Length: 252
Image (cartoon, rainbow, N blue to C red; front, side, top):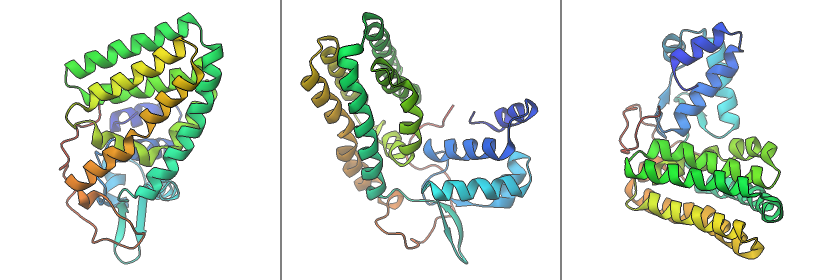
């Protein structure tokens, strides 16, 4: 649910307004529809979403606790810039949980699990051929969730998904990089190959290498868009021009 229309439809079904506003704003931040440094106005957001200021204010507080929003006294509320230490923390959590699940998957995965993972690889290749990084991102999420399920740990994926919000912003920035999708698909394929062969060490090595690709990507992205990053918690001249400048496609 990433649209205003979806929010109103969900409210009509009785869902909690604050939760819906939080989900919508979080989705916009992670998808880079709201860029790092963009100003956030409670009044403007409430008017746009057709809700009172209270659920917006409460949602911004929650987003602040997740590190996605910064509040600067006498300056305002802004989408946080990407901090490399936050990426490193999110990566640590993700790698620990996904690799632990994979180790179980090497012994538990069935032929059906492998077939479903390979079907996702085919869909990812089709998204690459269509030059559709947004579709690829969704399929990438499905692939990693399905990989955890193959190890019997599907219930742990929401924990990973919640923890990697900062990481996802960097990942979305990396998708338009030349040959990036081909590289990620080849890495995914290597993981599935090792899983199917029940090669514990090979599967673990392939997945860790894949997950750590983000650190290399961040170096490239930061060189291209230094204004989206920060190494400090101090205010960094917030931008009030929220127009997209990264070339990342709008979320669907």
